[in-house]
Amino acid sequence: MRRMSEQPARWTQATVYADMWTDPDNDPRDGDGDGPEGELATLLDFLAGYRMTLRMKCEGLDAEQLARRSVPPSTMSLLGLIRHLVEVERDWRSWISGDPVPKLYGVKDADFHGAVAEQAVVDAAFVDLEREQSATDAALAEHPDLSERLPKDGIAVRELMVHRIEEYARHCGHADLLRECVDGRVGQ
Image (cartoon, rainbow, N blue to C red; front, side, top):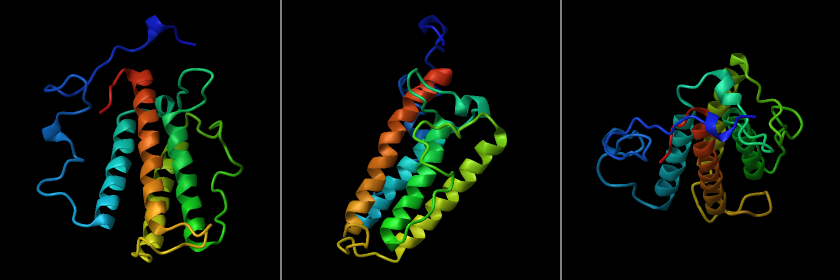
């Protein structure tokens, strides 16, 4: 276990605001012009932003750093979050179709034991995440009416979209802290 004195110093690439990940002018999440029009477009824009934020939190790290556990007793890691979100995307498809989608990584892995420091595991997790996000996006695209009720517990498409945003936003907060533990990089 690392001692507090062994923690990495805080750092950022931003030069304008020292507590930001990147300068606002260079932030790929900030589009030019007006924001999206309409409720669905707004929800999709927020989801895309949080997905990009999560990827940004993982950029530039090797397999060991991505699999590194946070502060004990937590077993969370950045790689564990990625793998968790793969399974969550699959679960959401079950909500949409009403048919269960089997776990990709086997039994529920709340302790992230499968998130090991092997490059093949890391590469597979990012490929899996992209594939599962695309599959869930495609399944939801068939239900553009935000008030439509889906088979799983009669949840409305709108509620599922908000839940998706909430899930990514919450885990981006975890990723901020995890990344700072790995190399001191601060988030925004």
